[in-house]
Image (cartoon, rainbow, N blue to C red):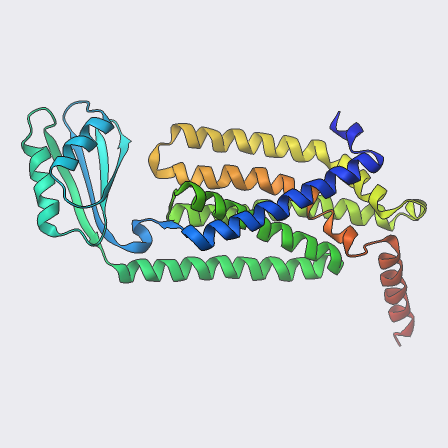
Length: 310
């Protein structure tokens, strides 16, 4: 059904409408990031991290309400498993404040908690982690750009890079909009999204390049060739994305709070990556003037270079 819809002018209109939607979403993401920023987790901001267990089952909300009565500052409580909890406090919290709520939960007979570990993560460590994470992200982007510059004609390479930036911005915009904690696992998911988005764009780009090189397609318009390329790769793309989404959804639902941010970022990245490989990576080169003549000129230049060799 999708392949039928992608035929002719309807498919071209669909791609350009998707590209317009992507542009609007990117602008909204940039606006949200500039206004709200990201909710950086303890990995980056520093603070107190305490893990404890309870001897009997206690509801998370009930435990949170009890700690609030004995805690003067801000904190975040998450369940790590059966009767296993983790509490994060902002670096502004005092040691005395931490000891108050710890004494309260350990002395309460209904909770009967046991503190497993309590540590302070300095802001300097968080700054170093953030710098190293950003450096890793930047290095991955540079490597991708160099790879695309070698592999593709520049128009297809630009389309793939723009699609990649689009995917990262939409994921970051979603985290900013929903105020989801941004920690090291989420940063790791961004690196995974770079690889996945690049793979999707390369599949479509390779097919576009192959069809443009076929001389029998010279009579077709670039829009028709791109539509044919998308149709021929659509089934493979949907199956790959669907199976990966099923795996990530399982992590999201079953792995618990520690990996929830990772799963949300990866799930969103796969969805928008599949979308951008069609609406941006394949459509932007058409706007930049991609045609079969680009490859004819390249082949003529390579042939002339071989003839000129001594």
